[in-house]
Image (cartoon, rainbow, N blue to C red; front, side, top):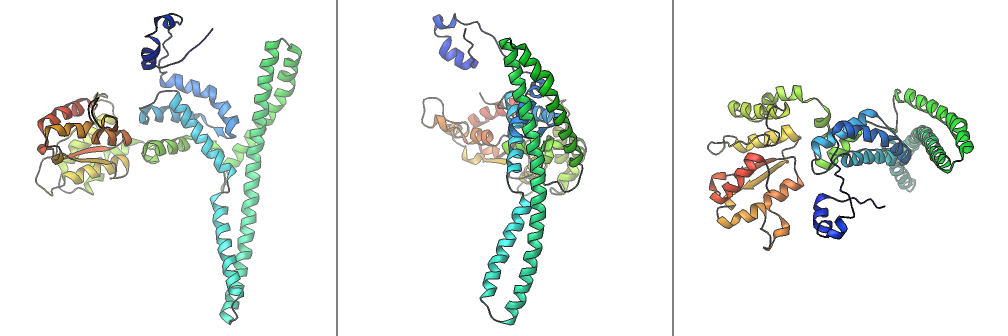
Length: 396
C-alpha cells in the first residue's frame, strides 16, 4: 500500500501524463478546511506543541491563529499557515525563557561600564577621582544587589516553567507507551501505566498549572509562559508588516471617526475623505464585493491641492505608516512596449522571471495603497491592463 500527497498542478504535470502510474492510484481530493474545522485541528495539536516548546497555549491563541491567518496570510492555506503561526509564537516564548531577560542584561551592561570607569579612577590621584570612586562603589553595590534579586526571581520562574515542561513530557511518554503496550497486547503493562503512573502525573500537572495561574496574576513577572492572541498577532505583524494593534483592536470606533482622523492631515477636502471612508467602511462591513478591490479612486485637481497627501493619509490610517504606498509614475509608461515594465515580460522574452514593477512590489508588500501618479500620461494599452486591476484587483 502506498499513500501519496501532491498538489493538483504537480499531479497534472508529473503523474497524469503517465497512464500506467495514474491508474495505480485512487484520487482523493483534500480541500482546505473551514475556520471551524481548522480550530478543531489546532486544538488537537496544541498539547504536542506545548510539550515541545515548554509553554502553555491558550485557546484564544488558537482562535486568533486561524482567524488572523485567514484574513492576512492569503498566499497559504489552512491549517498549515495557522499551525506555523502557533509554532513560531510558541518557539519565540521558548527562546525568551532560555535567554537572560532584558532587565538583567541592561543592569549587567551598566555594571560593566561602572567597573571600567572604576578601573580608570583608580589610576587617578586627585580628590575628585576619589569622590567619584566612592560614588561608583556605592552604585556598584546597589546594582549588584538588584541583579542578584532579579536573577533569583528569573531562576525561580524558569524553574517552575521547566518543571511544567518535564511533567508534560513524562505524560506524553507514558501515553505513547500505553498505546504501544495496547497494540502489542500487553494489557497488564498498559493498565499499570494508565491507572497507576498516569493519574499521579496528571494530578501533579494540575497542581503546577494552578500554581502558574495564581502566579500569573501577580505583578512583575519576568517571563511569559503563555501564548495568547497578542503573541500570535506579533508573528503576523512580522510576516505581513501590519501593526499589531490594528489586528487586535475593534475597527468599529476607528472607522466611524476615519474622516476626522484623516482631516487632521488633509485640510479642505471633506468630500474626497468622505467618499474614501465610505468605501473602507463598506469593505469592513462586508457589504461590498469581496472579489473586487476595497476601493478604486481617481483624484482630480490641480497641483498642490492634496491628492497625493490623501493617499499617504489613507496608508497611514490603514497600515500605521505612509511608507505602505506603492507609487508608480505613469509618465514613464507613455510607450506601448512599457506595459512589460509594469507587469513583467511575456513568456520567452528576456526578463520574464524578473516580474514587473507593479506586480513585484505588490507581491513583496501586499498590504499597501497603490498610487498611479499622473495616470493620464500612460499609453492606452497600459489603461487596458489597469482596467482588469481596477475591476477585479487581479492579474492573470
